Amino acid sequence: MSLPSVSTSLKPANISTRRKLSGAIISALLVTVATGCSNNTADTTSKTNVVSSTKASSTTSTSKPAADSDQSVVTALQSNLGASGIDEKIVSAVPTEMDGIYWVTAEGLPAFFTDKSGKHIIQGQIISVGQGEPVDISGALVARTAQEALKAVDKKDMIIYPAKGETKSVVYSFTDADCPYCTKLHSEMDELNALGIEVRYLAWPRSEGSIPKMEAIWCSEDRVAAMNQAKSGANVMAPSCESPVKEQIELGARLGVRGTPAIFTESGQQIGGYLPAKQLAQTAIDAS
Image (cartoon, rainbow, N blue to C red; front, side, top):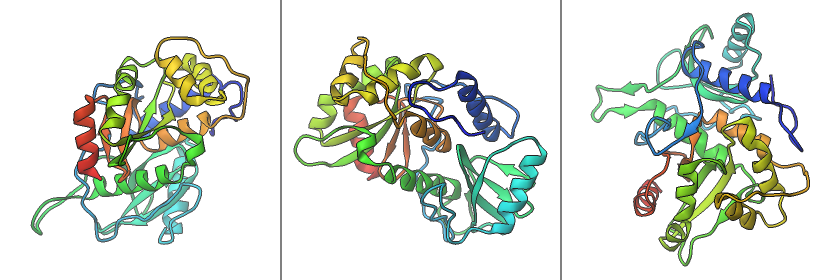
């Protein structure tokens, strides 16, 4: 059920289907997650502190299985999903510190846990207790998956606003030109850059109607100028091109993005939606 190639358009039905399935995984295959414009409330997917797990996954990309992936679990889960009418490629299932529980990465879906039989999907926080400070196992895995996936994105496929002077931290922001909170964040870009924060934009159109505008921005000769223009409410026109918008939509789905702006640190921790510049800068620096 992969999304079609995006050069001039992306079929609305396929985006809707992808997001419905993403939401189904998040809610035990029962509900659809709606995308929205976020002011750092319900759209955050992983705000927990990251604590390393003894067998945490070292997955780098959903295109390549992790070295310690258990193929028998991958095969079983793939078969069980197919029997339930879900046609998604499972890439890796790596063991965690919990006996019989595996961390799963799949193409176009948020990562999740499963058991050795591949019959159960488990999504959410899993906390280890009994040996001192509680350890958020899921938080460490989610962050590590996001860190490696974001690191793999070519800089030429992002729209980057560099820090002024010393770069104290880098944040990745999934953005939509039509999102009010994205616009508010963008209006504070100069302040963020002055505070030493480099902002790297990735495309995340919240609706089918926003896709042409996002593609026009990424197809513009001067993407920064086009983004500034779009954030000011002006129309952006550009010739069609082979843009990375489709891949970034899929990346966002894989990382559990449910609204914009969705902001991640270099360590892979999602620090929420919109935050005032000084708060965002300090949070990003603390998380580095």
